Length: 190
Image 1 (cartoon, one colour):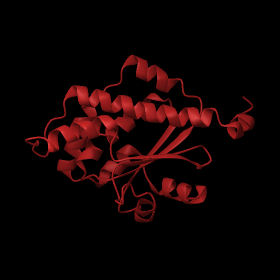
Image 2 (cartoon, one colour):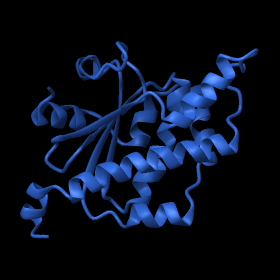
Image 3 (tube, rainbow, N blue to C red):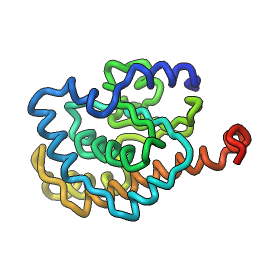
C-alpha cells in the first residue's frame, strides 16, 4: 500500500494543469487546448462542485502524448476550477512518476490517465484510471465493430458530456467520502 508520505511526495513533485502542459510539444499543446475549449460544465454541475466543503487532493498520472489523456484530463481542470479551491489538482507525467505509476498499475499496465484521490492529509481515498464506462463503451463500439476511427478523430459532444458527468460523479464520491469521514468530522468539528 502506498503511504501518505509517498503520496505527498509525488503530489508535491507534480504540477498544475498548465505547468504540466509546458512539457508538451506544440502539436500536443494544440490538441490539449482544442479539447479544453470543447469541455463545458452545466450550471447544475458547477453548483454541485462549488458546494464541496472538504479538500480533496487529486493526482493525475498522464502523458502529453496520450489521446485518452487529451480527451479527459482537461475535464479535470474544469472540475477543479469549479470547486472553488476544494479540489487541489496536480498532474504529473507517468514516466517521471514511474515508481508510483508502477504501484498503481491497472489491468497489469501503467495506464493513463490514472487518477489518485486523497484527503487533505494525503491519505488514499481511491483510484480510478484509464477511462470511465461511457468512454469504454464508445471505444468498444468504434474499435470492436466493423471499422474504427482514425487517430485524432473528433469526439462527439454527447460522448464528452457523458464522460464529464461520470468523472464529476467520481470527484463527488471522493468528496463525500472525506466529508463523511468520522476522523475529519472530528478534526473540523462538524
